[in-house]
Amino acid sequence: MDEQAPAAGPFPGDGGWGSADAGRLQSPPAGPAFGQDGAADVLPPGPVLASLTAQAVAGAGSLTDDELIGVLQAARRMANLAAYQQTVVIAEFARRRQGEFEAAKASGVPVGCRTGSSPARS
Image 1 (cartoon, helix red, strand yellow):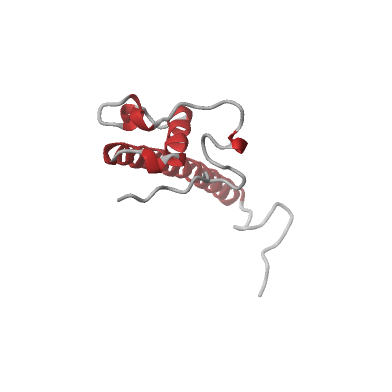
Image 2 (cartoon, rainbow, N blue to C red; image 1 turned 135 degrees about the horizontal axis):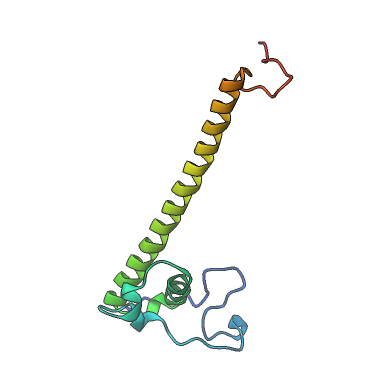
């Protein structure tokens, strides 16, 4: 497997780490942190893990197999956090709609109508 990952980063205009348009500050490679028992291998999902994961993905061609698996697991932890956050927000939205429904039902307003309006007729 002598294939190299493309030098470009994951975003338009991003030439990857070490390129002329990557900015003046160079970040150290994040790959070693994702090795077995590495610091990023046990980080909970959040901004630090997201940043390290993005750095590692940008240099995926230079990672060992062990580091690639660590980055994959980190990306999964981040995706699981996003799914959890979506579930919490959807549940809150549904709770609010149910509360509005119960309030309308208790006040005698037809479902789907505002106070003073009548149901639509087909």
